[in-house]
Image (tube, rainbow, N blue to C red; front, side, top):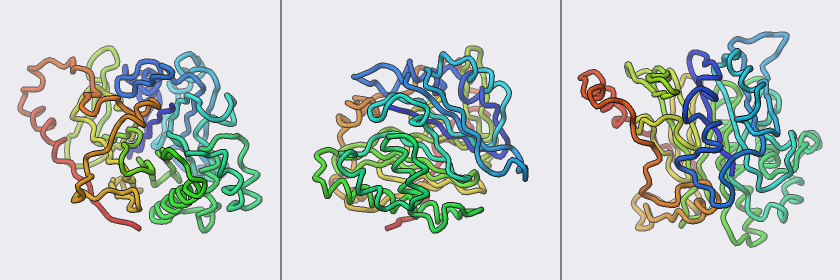
Length: 363
């Protein structure tokens, strides 16, 4: 299945430092995954896409993101390498695809945009062919005509747009995007349940307006784990050793960089925290990151006896999760032990374990 990565920073990142140079970048993960072991196909070679926003607003160019897509494998596209060396952006979406629904075409490559909004998806909607016609009835003529591909993902984006008070708005509040995402998931669940879907839907959705980000890790099941999703935050993301070994550094309490990824981009275990199943990550324009539970019939409270008992087999069979719950997704750290033993670095290492999530229930 697919995988994606998101970058948001107070300073723009050169795309190569995110997509091509790290030894475990999303492009290298496409054929050398350490966490997601797809039993059906070993690589994400069915196209890719990268979308980004300009560093500053230009009235002539507008506020829409620029998106580059291709149906060639990301690791074999020389134009992608050239572009990433010359483009900087404070907000980037990148996606590599392994098709399970929809044909191999540019129209089916993520991400997509509508106005200033950009969207991508990792997962699959159960029995989508049976609910597609009904989903379309929720859409205005304009949004219906906007869809040019045939994937469940782009139709899910269209449904999300229909949940917004005004999809053409010049500005969206974080709460507006958050509520529209909740309603999108609820509507998809209601439709799949109405056709008696026998397996759950995997809905790792991401949307941004260029300022806020909403990313979900969700499955319509109380027994199964969702597709993997991780986040990392800090003050700098840079190469610390030759060979593309990157790490997230925390020089102080500020969050200058936030990364969200299907699989960690670094081999530094302390850099990353796993997003909880059936939770939503909200990143505000001021770089605040909140992890919010998506409370519905599939949400399991921490106090519930079922909590912590989700199985990995369903998502693992689709190549969206490690087949073993206890797997360490991070390769052995090549950093010398003496580096870790320096007092300053011990402080940085310890700081990662002080990260916390603010839980704000929404219904």
